[in-house]
Length: 329
Image (cartoon, rainbow, N blue to C red):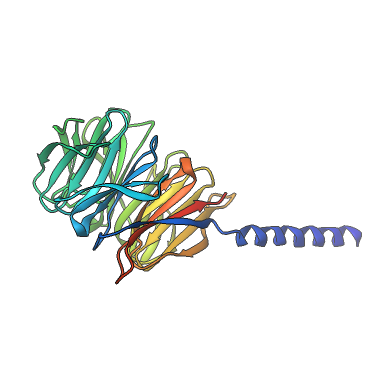
């Protein structure tokens, strides 16, 4: 009888601890940075971590904002862009690369002064942009279905045809694979960056419009943000098998994997961030939801600062802004 009572007490204690842990918010609002005079949709971010400066593609205003996280203000801007979407700051050369969907150009700037250096034409709809630290090159998704490898001077080194326009993609750090969302085909293309070939394609199952992506290389998991239905799709990166499909926030355009706490943050245009945690058996479940503001579907996770940034577009008289959340561990 005593053993049974002790077991019951232990179980009750473990349940109480679990409830207490789940009650701890995974994000805490720490402040905001206004971006006055910026109207319309906001797209992707990049960061100069050394100087704690973020670059924000303010697509709807055909501009880019240079924002100091230390000073909590806009400290520079680039105007006259054509629907800027992808942005990459490369610390190795201090340059800023901006992909423009409107005219299909890749524009290169000095990251400190924002002075233009070069413009390279890629046809149309230059979109997501990634830096390949292994080869010191860039990868650019563009047009009706290609990802191109580009050197740091903007010259195209080669490309991989995908058949439809690519959206978000992720690069292996310790290998040559690249995983590319191709939403119109409802699939992920697995590309070998060295041979410039498509190795495989992974389907998204019953979910479609797979725009954002994050990759857990150590755990070999791909996280896809799908819009129809609004779902977080988790795939095994080795073979494309479905691990889980979980309801999420609407119209997501960015999601992030935070390796230290094993959490996934999905940013939704409906005005919320959905937070998912990993269990001891390796499955994922939603552990929280934080209300942001309408249109807050893009941003940036900065694990080195333990911060999640969420872009909020102008709403009436309220200016566009960046919300700063602490990622609580």
